[in-house]
Image (cartoon, rainbow over the protein chains, first blue to last red):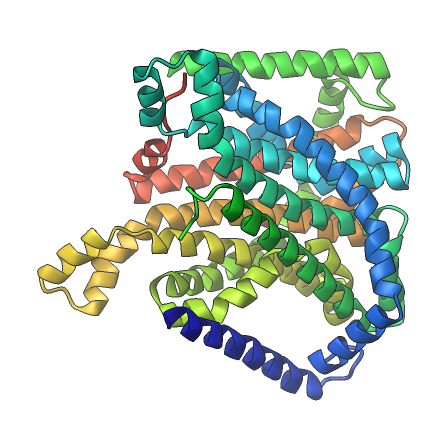
Length: 250
Length: 256
């Protein structure tokens, strides 16, 4: 009942928000800010005509490759750092310092090393999701409940068994959190790369819309990206609930 | 503690040595070693343009960041403590927190132009959702026992908020502000690199030079700003909420 109640409020809140936006956008010129009705119309038209799906599909290439590379490197590295006090003490100041540099600031380097096209986009996706995953995994693995490890030891588990049977399952929630945060960042990086390097796919659509002062077109792409991000996040959450039923938040 | 510091220093030395070796191997035009960056960095400091641009950019960023904290913190607390606010705001929060800052830039340029308001607005829009989300989780996690104690001593609603809830929230306020700051600095750089102004513009233009030393010097400056701001917030956390460190340390477990 309470769930139903809050679902109703959610729908109401979105409807109210869209209504306020519609009324607010009604009195300003269309070029300054498009109302949601125009954005939705645009989103539907560009989806049916195939422009948006084609651009999104083409973007998935560098998104997937960059994200998988980041996952493949950052998760083992995060475990190594999180489970070894000496390595962690050595790595922490470096990670903190590098994390403080916005990844977009490395764009000139990426241009220099990888050019303007596919490789550059993969590199930016990798960089933007890598550190997020690394930080989350290393923080998570060092916070494994010591009583779990003590229990494993008490039952006579050796080091190898302790790692595979206790630590790995206990760290999985953090791995999933890292995958989730990393994927959202990777999607952000996907569009960032398309705007900062040679404009292609969704980035090219945005640039064309911006040149025509077409805010409906811009907002249609933004809404699409927002939906993709939400779908990715909720999809991984659902997968986590299925695979790790012992750890479901809330 | 001191051995930890020793390992930290060792880690930094190792990283610098690796950077130096790598830089010498590929050359300054691809990745300048620290020995080449340091003199350029000192020159940039002496010249003054870098610091002027940095001060200007940070001033605009701080306006957006302060506004994001001023609006985001109360809203996040309201969401965490009231089911109604949670149901009303959560859908918008979930949608907007995943939205890419870079994707907002072309839209914000059309709406705000490329001046002061554009940069402040981008920083605001990039920061507020993270501030809200962090304080929301913090305020949901406040021990119900604390509130019960307040209630059994006959505290009014306002007094419970003021004397119990607020102090319990201090650590999360600081954490929210620290996470927000990371995103504020990132948004500042994204916005400025896109329209090539301010410190971000400086970074973009330095990419066109023959040596990568100036570019790396600028990145080191950003690194120092980020680390220093984080340290200041940590310090103020210790001043307003001495139990903060204990809270954070309490989350850390043993290692094998």
